[in-house]
Image 1 (tube, rainbow over the protein chains, first blue to last red):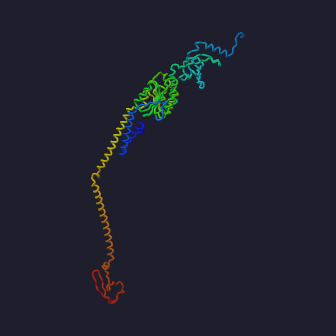
Image 2 (image 1 turned 90 degrees about the vertical axis):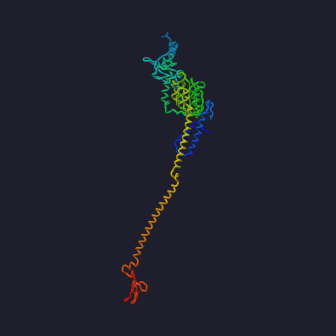
Image 3 (image 1 turned 60 degrees about the vertical axis):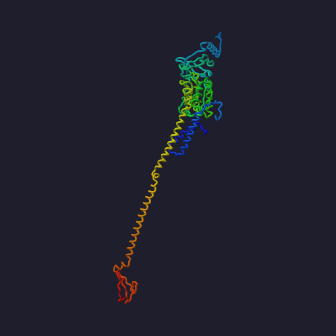
Length: 64
Length: 399
């Protein structure tokens, strides 16, 4: 799951509001639920494991 | 006249000039006056003006070298204290004041310059609210522009590291004091913008005197901040210090630490938020399942599934109604047929020979053959006469 924290939170918010709308087949809502759980775990992991990284502007390379 | 020395105009002016310049008092004198006829000679950078009070006036010039050191812009009507010397402009024979330095009268030069720049930039629309960019709520990359040796950068990095370590820091070390500070900051802003993936820029500098913070009032820097594609948070000086940088930035923070706090969310709050989203997920899926269960329950409790014999009963009822209908239809047919039959019978009856006989006719038979022609009869024939209720025998007497 190559995703940024921001993208993951956004998708998670999307899933919650979709489930809030209701009137969805059970299979579909189960699928969304599982995706949401994975995303929330991903976000928590990102938040817990993040270590500050400092780059000097003169040493910035692509992909940094 | 003849014993007198005759000199040229140039020599005269030069002589008076030397007299004036020898005077110690006139060589370094402070004069207070109001500026009028002000001309800013853009090409040379020299400033020309008159200084006057209620009853007198003197021409004055400030050469570009001295003028460039002025923080504020002289204007007509401005009361100033000038320091300089008195001399003569030989070409015109005009006595004038050569200004080395100028201070606004009553208000500090820096304060005046600040107000002037602020007014100018405000009129140019640099502080307009509509131009302020939104600070991204979840930045991936933060640009920090500050002095590499200052305390401000440490404060910023500490706060960013504590609150939201996920954000990568791109650091640009700059001068935050002195004449070249503004240009190094402008360069850093441009470099940050060239990277394109920096979400927010923090410009940080610790507290200092008005002179120390002066680079942050630079007009070119203001335009650089204004033109930055990346939103900029200004954290310059203490809470009470206001710089042009603060006004033009997309967000003003009272201190460098506060700037860092405004740049990123708090990871603890984020954890709380993610946890709340997760529990929303749980309760929503539970509600969804419960709803489905309820619907299923409702179905199983429906009368059809509860009393399947009802289906048969219904069918039987239907069958019954069909048989009633078929009976009725049959009855109709029978009635119709019998009425037809009666009609035919009555027709038949009308046509029956017996009926004819009943009306008074009788059938004549000769040798069992019905006689309906007189030529079939001859005198002496024995005939029978048939009536409805019997037969009579007769003899033909005459034909």
